[in-house]
Length: 556
Image: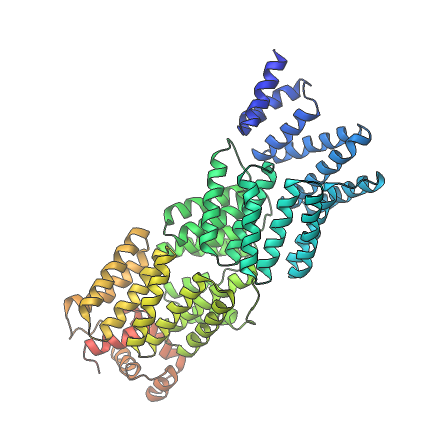
């Protein structure tokens, strides 16, 4: 064995970021006792980056102890590796061990009365804790100290950590402009290769998550693409999957790449299954369920929602929308209303992301069952959230909702104007599914106004998009909806029962569910059930569309 040649090849592999080659070569050399502390550091890094986490922790501990035994010059590197052990254990969910290593590193620095960049790294957990408890001002103060320590010691890794933390704090405080600038500045150092791979991976994930929480879809997409390129340039790279892969799947879904999004989320689930008890698995299963629901795989979607719940992630509002797709409208209403009536949120946190999703679901379900007041209330709140955030995504969502509510309220002309603005918004954001849904609503509005040619064109454009995405339920519903436009069968009753015809005739006059119930001497729940059934038979999802159908089929 030519030890020096083998060492050179192993070091070269790490230098080229061929981590798997480097890991395997260094493992052989280490088994024969040929690695010094510098090569053990390379082995620790290669082991972690290739997913050999337990090996990585073991080698890091050896590196820590070797530095600690080297006298005064080894104090700082021993503390730094102790800090890395603390941070990486915490990321793996080993919080007790992580805390223990951080405390040990701090004690080592205190006993040596040593000041250095390691002091800045020790502040990072306090900043993250402040973010977790919803105190962005305190977090910003801590991360400002991290940044200052990084500048004082010219430590690029620490500077990036400080900028990341301050950017996250600004986003959490609702200052999107400043937060975006801080996050982008941090990423400049990452993309130019100024920081070690451990910091780079953490930075990419943190920025993608922060952009997602700020509803900044364009910036999230840009950094997601950059993360993909970064990962592709490194052989055998394993970490930075988990939660980041979940968000990457969400972005792919938003931009119409549903097949890739489903493959990505399943890779995330496979990765997370190797870390027992990782709560991000709940988030991953929820995203998988959303994709399956949209594709019409309702049984598989329900199983995924249940798994998400088992992992501690709320299955709502997706499960409520699934119940609506299954025709179980009473359960859908009960589920979404329970979540909708929770106290509205006004801060830019992950909770606000969930709130926006709940509002959108409440609007969709409210319109489907004819509960216009609930849809109106949810739309008004969504409009306020959009104004507070200044987000193009939320603005498009609010406009779409406002158009649908106007259509359900019997004002197709206003609805069409608002929906046309929403369509332009979604097209600028490159969101094909949302754009197709708006086109469907525009088609209904045009049909209600007697413009059947335009309605047919909008239906055709929407159907083409739904087919390309694999949105089978939307294709089915749309085909049923457009039959009256294309067939001209004005005398067809649509398979409605006499009671359903009575309900539809009253609804077409603008009567509320309560007014219909009083007129027919039945309960509001029964009215809602009749509406759900006739919506399904007619292939429509709103009262306005059902009213248009009634007019076209001379049921009024």
